[in-house]
Length: 276
Image 1 (cartoon, rainbow, N blue to C red):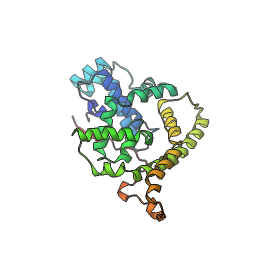
Image 2: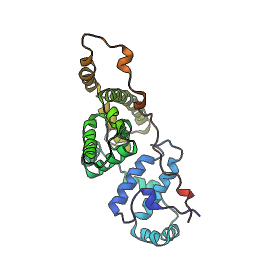
Image 3: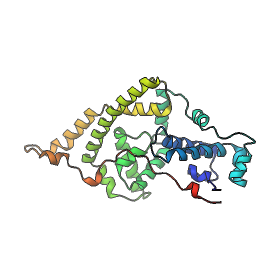
Image 4: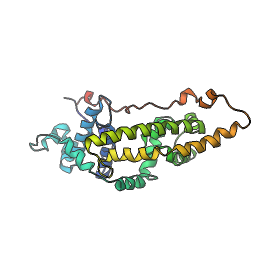
């Protein structure tokens, strides 16, 4: 029977405290919930994340698991039929308001947790801002300057190495392309979410955390038209006074800086192969 390392599943140390365990679960559950991630392996990993949290968040079950492994944690259930993943999800992600989400993002931004997340995303994607903005919670083109400043501080302090990709993907042409893409996708996503909301009875101010975060982000990004126009005037129009640039030159951005297509992040798939 394969042994699952619950600490490895949640990506935490064995001496992690309850807050660290809860934070790790929340982050992974949001990323890999089957309704939010279409990767065919996401559901299995989501179940493993739920079970890991179920065991490690309970002192008695955690102690039994630390001593005896899977068998010990199962014994600690004392005849319970199993793990109610839906109940765990509901307890962690209750119905919230837009104000609660704004408060969460406000506390997260510029926190040690956000800086660490930005650092990890920067290293993981070798400085590619297209992917960094997709991965960091609450990140979007509106606060890209702030995120770039944090990355530059990390580079200047020697905590991370400088990547050429960071320079190219944070340059004005790449930003303009990213902002235009974000605006287009935001409008499309807002329309799709509105249609889904009508079917499921979702109303603004009433809904689960993920849906509210999506709606809030889409509304911000849908208002980027003036920002994009300003950047185009500053960085594009200013360089072609008196001479019109060919259209294909205006639209050309280095192929290697191509924006990423939507795809689920890769996660650990080998835990079931681990042996005792």
